Image 1 (cartoon, rainbow, N blue to C red):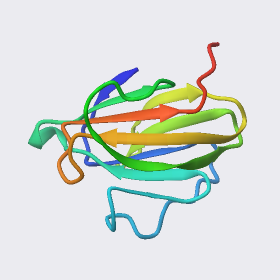
Image 2 (cartoon, one colour):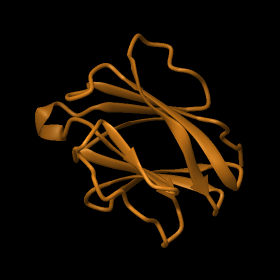
Image 3 (tube, rainbow, N blue to C red):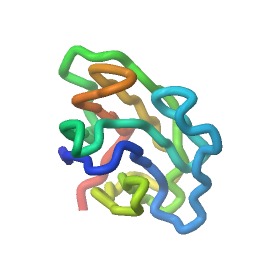
Image 4 (cartoon, helix red, strand yellow):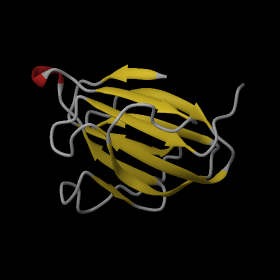
Length: 122
């Protein structure tokens, strides 16, 4: 799945209304809580970043920016932006989901690749 972004701050989070957003966004490329990951991309005025979400490793040369786990209690992870626009709803097994993120640059990424531990087909 690929999307082009509008706003420069994106979130990968559980679809629950009880998401806890990271307090210290901006300290690094990606910051996370138990059920939400925040990361930065280019906004549309700067050319927009292409974001790929997959269950496969990144096939492009890039820097690994984040490795961790977020809780998907609902069995759905959502990619949304700082304007609360939901780009994608991704079905995953309920519970902890491993997440790896690569990008071509840690400040102004033209592309970001998100690998999820598992994506379910519905």
